Picture (spheres, rainbow, N blue to C red):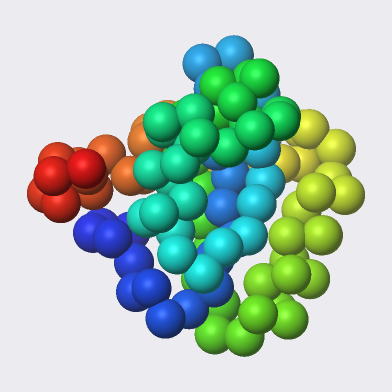
Length: 105
């Protein structure tokens, strides 16, 4: 997945904490949104559970597709979400590692 993705598209992403609790979201600026998670700037579930590690994301050209995919993933049981993450990120690495050091964030 490499460097920071293109900001002109839409993203469905999954953040996790050390206990494996996940948060599914959608954004048009994944770097900004991940930074907000890491800083604890998002109120509610994300802040309460400390979901600060980007473990999965998908990129979409159209917002309608991203919204539909977010709803689909949110409707899944915990184990199905975990299987999706393991498929592309078996070690649950932080996919945003190195994004913010490069930008001085």
